[in-house]
Length: 208
Length: 208
DNA sequence: AGTAGCGCCTAATACTATTAGGTGTTGAGC
DNA sequence: GCTCAACACCTAATAGTATTAGGCGCTACT
Image (cartoon, rainbow over all chains, first blue to last red; front, side, top):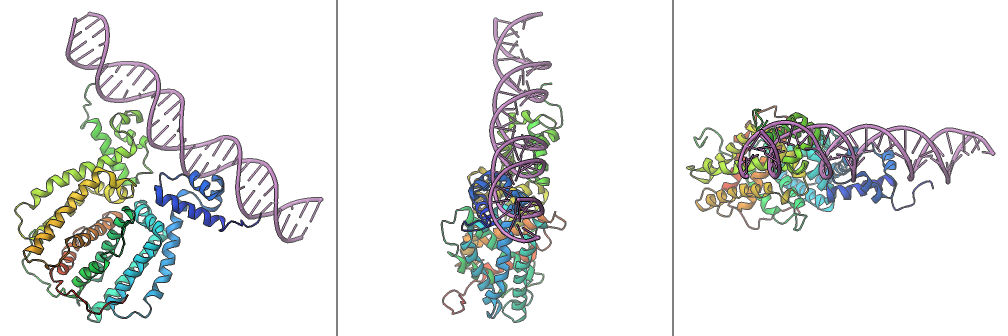
């Protein structure tokens, strides 16, 4: 029958089935049989397209993150100023998460647990992704929008950590509310801190 | 042979074996056989003490988090001021993480993935844990240390998210550096933002 | 027509969690 | 001293579940 005349190619059908099932039931509880049944073929056939269950798992976020990365530059194109860029970055990213909750669920709730996540291509892409934030903070420091002694790496940790936390909770609560609900306020709270950290030195305010 | 005369009770031996193996190899790759062999008994015997593999997994962080929760009040006892309390909280918690990296690894890298984590006792305890931060921020807001319109819930999100991020990376990188390395600086950066969020209103600075 | 190769299948194989059904030791009650 | 119940543990099923072997039919090119 040559090419499959279903809506999508076989590989795509497998990926979509796996994405749905992994996100719904978790990695462990999803069996190869579940996936192949959902995709409409036998278990053995699945192995023609993927090396195994783990390979299949890793393929999903790999595709998503690569796509994000490609879109990012275009999104930031033409936005001037570090604060505006950061704002655009966050709003854009959260919308992406909202649009692809299954992918996000896999990245945030399943992937990090995977022992060799740091050895995957996905991780390399995520690092690339975060590197953009470093550039933004460096720009902000240089053009005076942010404190001149702002440490871009720590600012990134705060922004990434906070966003991860907000997204993870939203996913765990089955996205029963809007991800943007308090984004504006939390943005102000974080960025406010980056702007005016003028004091720095030895004030004896430590407790420990 | 009545009571086992090994250093510890059988249940403790099983827990320690499981903790080590889960943290080292991950949940999936650790088999019941691995654990029972390490603990020095048969696979079946393990089921006398735990309902199954997942029950065993959940027992470990349950013990750790309960212990933390008990210690917390005592640690904050006598510390005055919201900023000082927050500082004490973070330094104390990170030291605990440093002292119990296996427990931390299980909580941060394995548990969150577990589909029904939110239904566990551990989750209830974690919520309790975080509630202390809310109290601290409310105190800070009332006594003037922090901005009067600081939203305690969002401040908590920032602190918890940032700490989770820092801890997770430290664990993923096999704790090859000190967890306290830039804690002071990151603390200042976060708390700085909480102190002086005076502006609030409609300045036309939005991009989206 | 013959045949290489693709896309898929059924039927092993090899693990692994969990359970059934013991066995030997201990200690309280007669 | 003997019985018997409880305990702590064991060996040997059982029931999945990932992965592999080997085959079958169709297509398209020679």
